Length: 166
Image: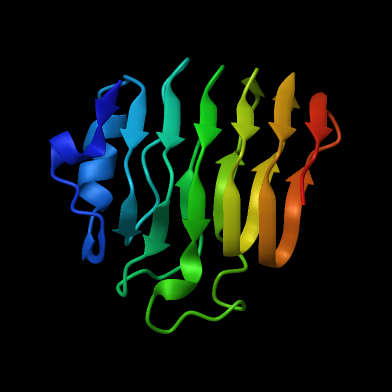
């Protein structure tokens, strides 16, 4: 497992950490995000198959003041990815729920198998968790607050287990 700090992430909530987070994700290894506030201005790279993204303790992805919000996908899983993340997009300058309607915390636009989204705290975002065609997903123990449209939004062909979410 690699740390985003090894790729130049600062985690101070002010510095744009998008490039550092993407560099860590692009290694296709499991990514560890230690305590801190990681501001992003764009969505992050899609995870690779079997790649985990784990935020530990009081670690948060937040919006950088230059974030446009429209269409931001914070995390995009791939087959058999495991995601445990804290996301709060309300910290950027000019944030409104209306601006974040088409932003997603975790979003899979195509069929993805065996994804686990567990223990996430997703706040102030358009849709917390979205998948159009998920197979055998596990979505549990997530806390999703103040969404613009939906906490969770799944297509008709989604299969899996959804439990213990608030």
